[in-house]
Image (cartoon, rainbow, N blue to C red):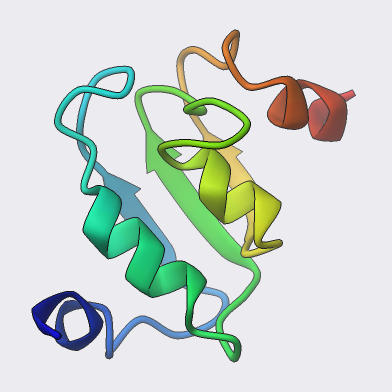
Length: 85
């Protein structure tokens, strides 16, 4: 699929920026494609927020793809809150 092709060059330990605000405009198909790449982990994700536990970049946390996150708001993701503390 085109989503798989779009994330094919993303490797472990890279920094990726994910657009959107809250859950609006978040590239869900690309996030899903990245979650399916078993060999990719330890990502540094830069986004406006942490998504929710089951949606947005929260899916990357759930799939154990993220080592570090830079976000201005994390209040909707109970998983990110737990990982942070």
